[in-house]
Image 1: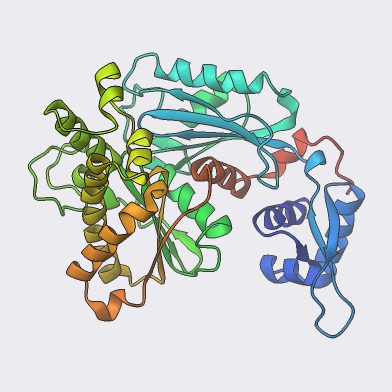
Image 2 (image 1 turned 90 degrees about the vertical axis):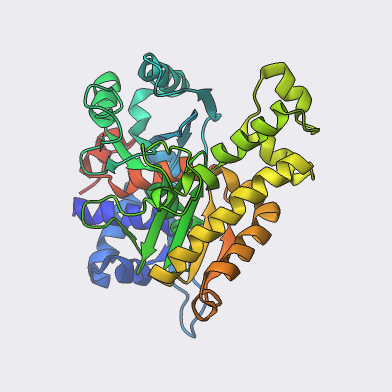
Length: 396
């Protein structure tokens, strides 16, 4: 009974509202079993009725949604190469706190302490008993089962981040690769919601990929499928963060765009970014994207360059996977109008039209997609321990 209750709560989180018949189909349990368990959850005040399904000729079926006031909260953590953001989310993806963001470089010896300080600051806004778990998304070779990240040395606190965070806060913690989590979030709540096969490109400081195949996240044999950024498509000799040359990431990431802009600004090129650069000796990725969106010529050139290389990489994906849709998500999706012509131009140049003409290229419009991905992986991994943090008792 408890497992079925949990399955219903999970299903209603990912697709809401649903009728009993829809829940039965989604979970694969009989209508009488679903009906009985839904009634238990109604009695426990953990779900509530929310209108009726459209009429199919007979009596309209009742639909149900999670009752978020009586369900625990999720503390979501989104880590990228430069910044970490945290927020508290409920069972309907409503943000229940401010988003707190701090620049944290994992190469810094104090980075783990800075991370825990940021989480603690958010915890101080809520009582511990109302938070079921901490969901963390982070770049790297993450084993989602163990929470270990092989992109870090074994003596780093970020290597076994799950255990180390659980030790500090005594709260269940789940860790997932950032691009995989973003793909799940886009598939469930974003541009990929109705797509059976979609490639979700995470355009950030690096270039990640999450692959949705037959409505499931594809992880590959060892769990590390989707290392899009390290496809050897670059002709420049610049060394990648992985230690090799030729990786797509060195020409198709926001970091590559920022580096290019820095080089041009140092040479004296005129730009609306010049004052910011002279003041701080750097510009941020967001500043570059904003400048490109209002037509700054230097910013446009920097974003055009990565867009073309990104399109070259996407052409390769189209040849291998033949997806229904490619969704460009992450921080870089803000520059859709600047990137799209360059991406399409490269796809036309490098792909076989018989394949690429049937693949839709879309840009995500979902705000805070990585934080939403952190919530998704936490709910997906929830177990019966979730009941220990409920505001009400489950009635068996």
